[in-house]
Each structure stands twice: as structure tokens, then as C-alpha cells.
Length: 209
Image (tube, rainbow, N blue to C red):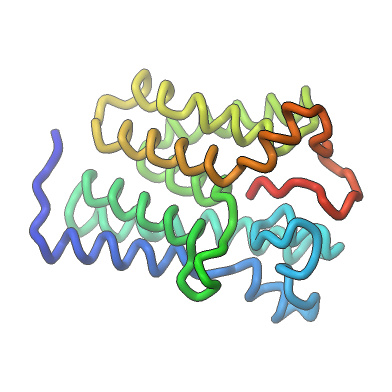
């Protein structure tokens, strides 16, 4: 059942979630780690896949944990204070913040890591199904962006089958649409058959985080 939120709670979920989501962990950890500005290498994205192109697996792992963790924290705080609907709303705001962070001129990552953090928290069966899907597609096809897009496409179905809450289904649809929008260039390369595979060393390799 959807719960009506007060204007204050609604504001706190949206603004608080967005601010948490907009923390650019990829930029921060590469600077602190002495690897320069991640936006100047590879695809220019701030996600973990592009951070890995610095050659620093430790920094990529920290970025992955940070990007997933900020979605988790946003959901947990809002849900503890105001319930499931608030948690889903804060998760969606955090996801939006990661994609369009105000601190970086609204040029952020592509959302896959934050998506997993949010889904595992709002409805863990949905998150687990999404993670298994990503791993299976990545193992077979060896294309990170394809794994992310396939997972995103199936997320609303998983939410419908594994979780009855409408806020969760709406959140899955919202994140799916934005993931596809942010992966426009990847989709074009996939259609042309030129999308780099996992482990490719090309500078233009696609970022899926």
C-alpha cells in the first residue's frame, strides 16, 4: 500500500536522496589516490568501469562500493523514517543525483552500480535477480554495457513478479528508462557490432557504471 508523505518528508526524500546520490566517488577517489581526474581518461565517465582504466583496481573497487552504497544509505534512512514509499522515492532521487550531479555540471555516471545498491535495499529478491542477470550476460557475452542494459530491461518484470509494492515497480521503471537514456552511445555501438568487450584496452571503451 502506498503511503502519503507530508510535504516535509517528500522534500527531505527528494533533496536528501539527490544530494547523497550526487557525491562523485569516482572523481574523489581518483584524486585522493593520486590517479588524476577520471573525467580526462577513457570514456570520461565517473563510474567504476572508467576508474578501472587508471590501472588502479583498488580505486575502482572503492568507487563501486561508494556508488552502490550511496543508494543504499538513501533508501535505508528514508525507509526508516517514513516507510517503503519514502525509501523508493529517496532511492530514485539518489539515482538521479548520480546520473546528473550538480557538483559536476550535471554530468555523472551511467547508474548501474547505484541501481544495484538501490534495488538490493528496496527489495532484495529483485536486486539478487538483477545481479544474477548481469553476471550471466557478462559471462556469456563479455560486454558490460549489454549486461547492464539487459538487467535494466528485466528489472520492472522482476519487480512485478517478486515484489507486490507499486513504489518498487515504479522505481524499477524509472531507473530502467534513465539507464537506457544514459547508454545511448553504447546502444549505437552494440547495433553496429563495435561495442568493446570486457577487458578491452581501447580508449573509447564503453562505461557501464
